[in-house]
Length: 291
Image (tube, rainbow, N blue to C red; front, top):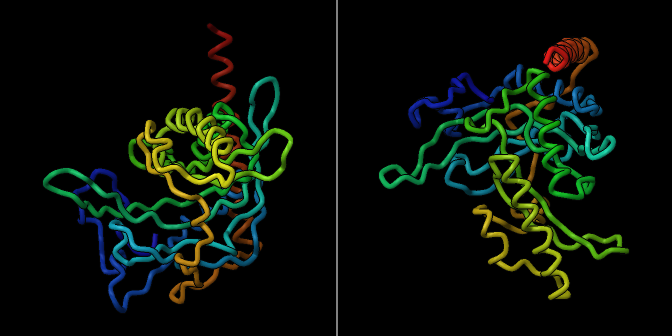
């Protein structure tokens, strides 16, 4: 994303890295132009607004797969904002609003094998982290939304969305409220779900579990044993705004200020994508008709 290293799935650990990847002193990252274009293209495909000013931020935290101890991301001024996805659900159309589709780096994966506990392999993906509001009200709706989003990104040429290669990951936020009230209870987050069916199963467990917890304890705490059946780590979802992350503008990266010509060029790819998606839809319809 910020250097010339290959983004190659299956390469040996620590082979596609350089001083920029590792955040060594004196290096300067340079944004990948194609990733910037794919992010804005994603915004067009998801009916987002495209601000004329966006910036990169540093999100500071320690994790084994982040040798820099910070993540380059977009926070308060992302490249896209205020979009939506409409998809078939039940007997009609459902609509899910998207706060933003922003650009950030996902650095590596951690391997927990006996002989090799860490394998640093840089992973760069363009649009990452749709922040959803509470438009999704059931496990089945979340499942259908994710499939609709995947189809948009695949037909749009943004990503192959191959989960086995780590191209799609989901962080699932869950909060509940008693019938007749407006305020949602405390959120929990199920991290790094790697399948849509796994998301659905997790929600089918977590929603009743949170409801029982809310009824049992007035303060609505997070019980550490809840959700373990799904095999994924849970945490308090309020960390997104925690002071510990210490968001601040990245001093090594210039803001992004797209002009009319650049946006028009990206938008032309959007119409090409829609034509391809229409062609695929027609081919499927014709196949069904012949059957």
